[in-house]
Amino acid sequence: MDMRFAAACVSLMVAAGLAACSPEPEEIDVSSLEVTAIDEPYSAEADAHGELDAAYERAAERGTRVLVKFGGNWCPDCRIFAGMLELAPVRAYADAHYEIVAVDVGRYERNMDVVARFGLDELEGVPTVIITTAQGEIINTGTSAEWRTARERNPQDVLDYLTRYAEAPVPENAQRAVISRP
Image (cartoon, helix red, strand yellow):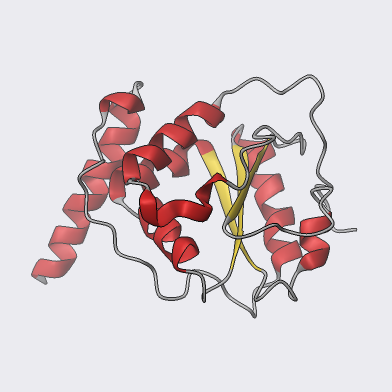
């Protein structure tokens, strides 16, 4: 057996164990894990509407939330945020509670019709993260832009953020995203 394959299997088992055995993710200390920026976390060729529609279907089936991250491969904060989401304990928690969709907005000229599904005319910056229920109710109102400084953050901040919104109540005045292709 290839040693890299074996190491990857062990990492996956540890991550799965953390997700299954730890009801208190704030007890997992990921702040010191090394983060590697992902070279190309966004695909210009992806069918963003189709991926978003599929994420809402999965979220309804699984009882999870939908996390949409708008960004571009040119953006260092987008690439670092994507790298933090790929750390095994963070990924295990995210996979258990979210359907994640990466939407490439290029330099704000691509997939702006997907942005509009969330009631936005434009993005003030990237990465912009929007978390909704499976019914499209926007949960993280007012915090969607806080990851534009991902370079100044650590993985614990991401895990804490995911934990905060995994079961946060729906705000009374929650906007609703369009959950199926317009």
